[in-house]
Amino acid sequence: MTAGALDNRRARAQDAVRALRGRVERLDDDAIDLILRDARSHYAWTDRPVSDALLRDLFEITIAGPTSMNTCPARFVFVTSEAGKDRLAKSLKAKNIDKMRAAPVTAIVAWDPQFWRRLDFLFPHEDRKPHFEGKAAHAETTAFRNSTLQGAYLMIAARALGLDVGAMSGFSNAIVDEEFFAENGWKSNFLVNLGYADESALFQKLPRFSFDDVCKIE
Image: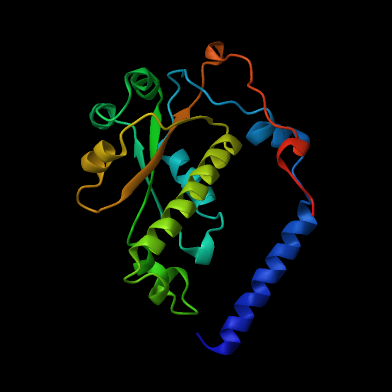
């Protein structure tokens, strides 16, 4: 890309952000309640389906979230079929199997150890592959951290689209990796049930820390 073309793209990007801020300064309180403040983790589900088109919308929002050096190491498998759920059930602790089977979708949030090979596409203005090539520990730390971020973006984006969310960690990563990623070498991080919840299974919201409990301003 020539210097002039790069300057043009930068100018357009800056204009787009200014235009966005001109339209929306912040989310209103209802929107904040929906995605975080009054949102709940769900354990029971209705049989209302989640379309493939909605999953594609969900991904398009999720992938827009920031990652270090735009590495985008997360990989997602949306398990919806009975055959897929049978395979996933092998990895789950017994108390989580019914939760997974009842949800229309269970997303496997994973990460690609070889994410850095795509940096020529994701970070085209500078060669960042040498930061990771031959440095497996550094690549793994970067991939795990940023895929966790992307999993959180997925959860917030799902709520923004009207879906309910129930994240799960009670499973064997090794079994998931063997069942779903034996060929590509991806590594599972955590699971997220997606759908439309049956609120009758909810209990009271658990306590959260106050600002002064866990924060400092220095």
